[in-house]
Length: 166
Image (cartoon, rainbow, N blue to C red):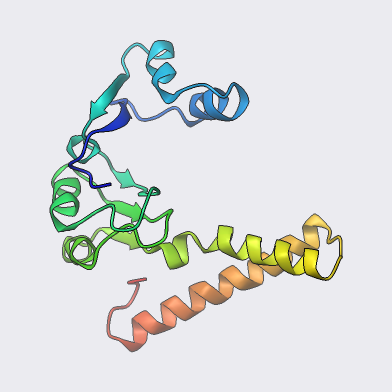
């Protein structure tokens, strides 16, 4: 899916109410369009274009190659300051270049989405060994993995002359 395609979207100029979204989606299993029925100043669009909505943070989480160079340029022009990928490779190389050139804080999926992948791996390891780990033990293992990912990304950025660029 490209950002210039028609997609469902909600826009709330005051900022999204995350607690309300959690209540609607996780507790009540409702459609995201219901957000606008609770907050009358929010806008729901069944066929909106999320690339045209002003935002500070984008979290592409649908599919590979979701954001191309044109879409990234649109997001930057609309005020996007940070992108944290929640899917595997949702931004094309052209889109990544746009974000980096615009000095948008960019967290690629391999780092930003690594916690979910690492947790799945830990669950598989636990299941394969027929163990039952405590939350604290599992959380400690996950922390070690995530700190390792951060250190590797940070070191590679330094090594390649792009400090802070994950």
